[in-house]
Length: 232
Image (tube, rainbow, N blue to C red):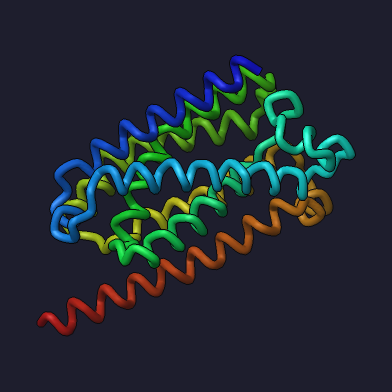
């Protein structure tokens, strides 16, 4: 249990550190009078909501009698089980609700939180491996691909987004696409066979996220092209 909390705390600290680095002195946030305090408040709120969704989704995907008791649900360090898919889904909902309520630049905020999440994903996965000893080929492939995404997004994609060469929000949508694909690939490697693939509830949710994300990416591309055309 102690190690589990240590991993969570390390991931949260790294997430906030990267978020601070991204949001500090950002011209768009300054222009909209958005303070670092507001950005960090949103980070804490969305993290708690993500944790709740991660627990609920895991219980839905892996129903066990112990989870349906108050202590079994709340004491997740003693009765482990969190869903990354649920965490991301909860994070999206909380961010979307908050930025709409506060009228924040949604695309910019989502990209900052996405880059920060990508920054801590490899650390979280390594901690998960050490805790659960669930070191499979599929999970190893996931870790390797998230490291590649971490490097590529920070070296290539984020500088382009900061220079406004790609539309705000594109990074977040691309992450959802690759997250879905990587998760589906890892599941297929560890549990081959179409029967298991289709019977596993989380895979169906991932397919929905993948299709929705591709639709959002196409929408962003069309909006971007229309903007360029109008500018000419």
